[in-house]
Image (cartoon, rainbow, N blue to C red; front, side, top):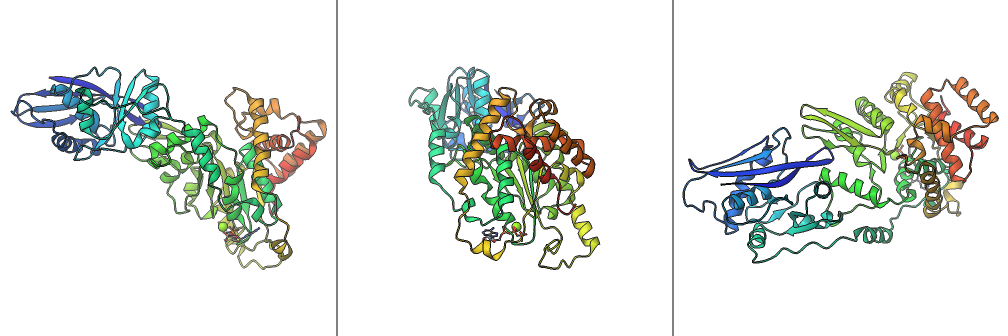
Length: 514
Ligand SMILES: Nc1ncnc2c1ncn2[C@@H]1O[C@H](COP(=O)(O)OP(=O)(O)OP(=O)(O)O)[C@@H](O)[C@H]1O
Ligand SMILES: [Mg+2]
């Protein structure tokens, strides 16, 4: 007696098909799982046995010893996690003829508790998306994950509370209803609107240049480095940045949710993320937690901030290696992780906001305070951030100490919603410009697109030439300046890049103290 039911494995951010074959034969009592199972899968037989027993199913219906072999195919994909509990249990029930159904267009996943209840599994969105694309008609999964699953439309989601439900369902004594299609996006957006936080640019006094830099970053997706003395407002500026980020489109929301679901940090209460991610890892973060990895590669901070913001406060305090690993994602918008089991590619298109002091004591270049650092201390502090990384940051801003008058001034700054409106308009201009080319933002432009969309008049060409020669700018800097200039122009709804737009973009490149 044997059976075959379908399940899925997560590899990187994608799901792939796993066939769960169960064979029952005579011989010594044995329950064996083969097909490159991970530790959690190998333990599955204990959970499945107990769950079957506690769901009033027979473990050995023929009342004699049985040899149960479970094969998870294909054998070259490592099967991780506990999601195979349900397909193994269902496969066993089918092979031992305790239930009957056609397993062709049905996919199963879920962890079993010892009493037969189904528990949450990671990566549901990716699995259901896979099921839909591969012609499956029904997906059986834990009830707690049903809301997340129902974000994918066009197939039946069967939310299962416990193994007993499954037995009754296939024996036609109690049908599991289909989960209704979700209208979560609108609901989640409405909830986000009502959850207004305390942060707003109106509450930050002065720092106009830093705010302008963040507006450009939000509109065009550029990276920003803040440098300034302690307490000048670098951290608060960065933390307020999400208030001027444009809303996500539904496709972006699904993409981000899928990443969080696979990383296992999506909560059932909030099955769809509509706010752009804002990640601020501590400077003690390891390379792997930043970039992703592990023997079963999981997304790191750069991927968790995809379509959102990666904020690295106290930038030079991160280990030199951790900073260097950012080079690939900052350039390409994705990371490639190679392991013995294979290579996975995670998306990592984020806006980097980094903050640092100009020197270890923080007072370098302060007109009122003396810097107590030695030149070698300053040099070694700065060396932590290499040239290639600085070259990838488009906007360098010095955040100066606030004057007393400005701090106590009664005039409020511009509120975040007004800035966000301008940003959304500028993003619309970009969407129209790039059409279906796959490019979303000015910062993502390929060099060919820069040539096409960032034409300069003769005056501007001259300005650019002088800047490149005087400051020894790299080819990358040249292209990045043009991209920022394009965003400056888009924010004022200008067709072409004016000399002023370019001049503004150039001044962000050249640091005051360089
Ligand atoms: N421009 C400002 N407007 C209003 N409040 C400010 C401003 N700048 C700083 N503050 C206040 O000062 C506090 C400290 O600022 P913040 O933590 O942003 O400084 P920082 O530049 O990050 O300093 P450090 O270099 O020590 O990390 C903030 O919590 C905020 O309340
Ligand atoms: Mg700070």
